[in-house]
Length: 414
Image: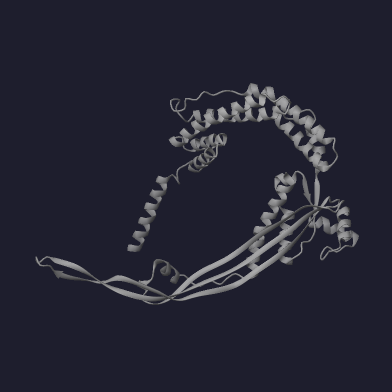
């Protein structure tokens, strides 16, 4: 009963302490994020996040103070940028001006939205409508992006077609359905689309098949715009028709022929190296423990005849054996992307991931009261069986798969 009373007392005071720190306060995370942006001089994002915080908790005076400060600094910075951009002599200034005015409009919208929650005395900032400025620069920015798209589209290689698609897409962002930018975007995107054939990876079959299959199944929205990964079923059907064998394929001419048959532009190959450190246990024996503790209390009468209590202490001893068990699996994936026509290497990288197991426990001989708090915890901990090398390797393969998917996504999104 005493244990439970102490436990709930500790939990109660912990909650009170955390609440006083703001951890459980609505909008605290948004306010914390706003402070981080403000400290990094990103006053625009600081204003947006402090506004989010106020929408969750309008009574947060700190968030209000940060919003007002960030709003003013962001507005001044944007107005300075407008003056500088207006001095640019060519049409490249229009997209820049659009983005600045668009952010000023967003700031103004946030001001209007939280003004409903905060009294005018506390939020004495004047709002400004930037619709007129945006209406002025939007068609000019769209025309600049459209002309950029036409320029890049005249170059027939995939890289320039990709730039053209992005430019036509920007034109639509500035002015929806601007001229025939939607049609031209679709044509440029189709011309820029790269078909990537993922051939079997070298290495442990279970692991490389898992990594490869996950890569082909999962693509980010960004990479899908300009990348098409050939599925295993698609490649297998081609191989069946042409009497090729997918497993164990090593002939480079065969790879090129399969790539041409599948209309692939690039080929991804990879090799996986696995290093396992099997479970090992390190034992530290004869760890001496001693502590001076109260073993009993005795009563006595002092010189004035008053009853007193005296604590009788005694040194107790124990010997500890500390066991530490660990294991690890490390995976290194080296991958290459090659151009099918030229056979040249266009990109290569190496990814590393590991999975570790660690467990510690202890046994003792002697008086348990002599143990330190650490060893008291460890002697109450039971030994655990270490996962097998294959289990650790599979855990590491999940990590390396996520890294590979992100790497491929970033490469084809840029």
